[in-house]
Amino acid sequence: MAGSGTAHLRSDDQRALTVENLVVEFPVSGGTVHAVSDLSIDLLPRETLGILGESGCGKSSAGRALMQLPSPTSGNVRLGDVELTGLKPKAMREARAKMQMIMQDPVSALNPRRKVKDLVAEGLEIWGFSGEDRAKFIDDLLRSVGLDPDVVRDRRPHELSGGQCQRVCIARSLAMDPDVLICDEPVSSLDVSVQAQVLNLLEETRERYDLSMIFIAHDVAVVKNISDRVMVMYLGKTCEVIPSDGMENKALHPYTKLLLTSVPSASDAAAAPSGPVKAVELPSPLNPPSGCRFRTRCPLATEQCAAEEPQLREMRPGQFVACHNVEA
Ligand SMILES: Nc1ncnc2c1ncn2[C@@H]1O[C@H](COP(=O)(O)OP(=O)(O)OP(=O)(O)O)[C@@H](O)[C@H]1O
Image (cartoon, rainbow, N blue to C red; front, side, top):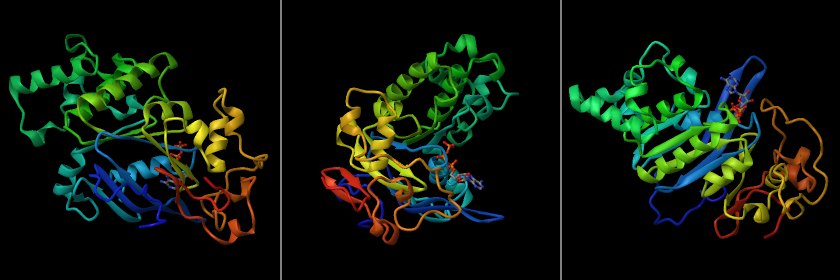
């Protein structure tokens, strides 16, 4: 798999989730949208991997394809030891229970006609819970996400705030006893005042329930703070995988540096790309540039970048970069 975009962990490390060469394409009238191209991920148990990139780079398409919603165009997704590709519907439902997704808009993720206690219980049939056991289980889950069961259990989504709805979504996911939580922009639709509370809850939840997490967002500071490692995507491809600790000083790919300079910090100067980034629109995923997809905006681009696609190389321990023109 060398050069395929995988994070290349040690071969003896256990994986919560393994993704190999994921491709997501959408046929449209003008051709094919190449939303995700050759994406590989190794997620360790209890690790949070951030996926960072600007709008339209394929983050959500990748997240949904991991859940097989819909299945990717090609590539393999393995949850623990279970290969999801090609599972029959019943086996897929059971496997999918172990990988839950928290969406950007919690209000529209919840059925407006159902009460909180029924929303949280939506997936519980497969565990066979009923009666008092079930009611206690739901109350415990509501408490664990910081909601008072006596206050919220009989309410419907429109009677709750956005932050409370996201807490209900998190409780509903936890009801399935998942191993992996995929969070797709989980706080971007919430008021700034409650974003930090929900981020803290996600972090506490990951620790308390021994979860592994994929955290998708375009906000560099949020992704950096919550993640152990960050995967930076540009136009459907991985350009860098980097430990989040100190990444503002360690980033090597010109695109990662560009993203980091959008976060005001004392280390901006160190992080700035070496040369002006060209002010052009994000190229169309219908017809991505040849070679390196970032080359049309890159201050370091050479002829080689148009001719040859750079593969991920381990430049420093745990840091992988797809660029012809950077050195460690
Ligand atoms: N169902 C679809 N049909 C056609 N094109 C799609 C579809 N879903 C996504 N796309 C396109 O795929 C590309 C990647 O979109 P995606 O939503 O995955 O990006 P993103 O990084 O999550 O962006 P955002 O943060 O704005 O959601 C975009 O060009 C988008 O327009």
